[in-house]
Image (cartoon, rainbow, N blue to C red; front, side, top):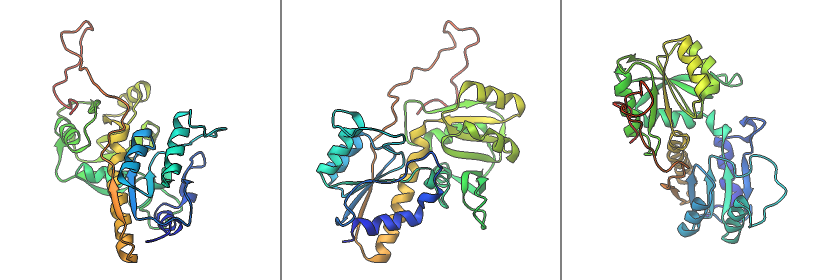
Length: 292
């Protein structure tokens, strides 16, 4: 079996820490470099449910997309939410490693996995990494479907192919608009509207879209917008990352057992759709793109 330091070196080769944003907190949070690793669990969020799952599974290493400590802290006391996660992992000899914005811009990365889950063909990065001479790394992806779809059809396809959440997929645009090109970005994406407009795509699918940026984007161009749950847009990366580590394990003869958590850690638990007969005038129809 490989040591943790060897597995971490392989993960760092896939997602170098130096490619993370300066504000980010990536890399190994806890773990003994000399401990042996036989079982690895991938998940989006380092929350208590995932830590408990790693313990039940007998994992030696938990790899998450979101950081546990994104900002500084003065305590890891078990009386705190995050401190309890750290204590439970250390008590059970489970290391924690984070790949966040360095996985977002990787080739392949988070948005490649999202595009694959949606059945889209990747054409190029939405925001290319200027340091990548091959032009394949970068934030977000510009894609195309197998054949043109109406916005209603694309929304239904996205709702069916992404992991089920209470939110489902929210849509802004004409349901009959024809979609030939799509920009996608896993996680929060409304800071990318400038790049999306410059790309001239028909639609943009991401997460955490806010009222004012959406209103402005819709006013400036006939751009269709699809807003999925943050967790759902990033979970496909776990499957991609697990497959990458599987290949490395096979190549080195490590015999790692690699798992992907199916635990839904999206914080929203229910959705009540508005009714056209409700109190608000002109309430929108929920006839397409309904939550799955």
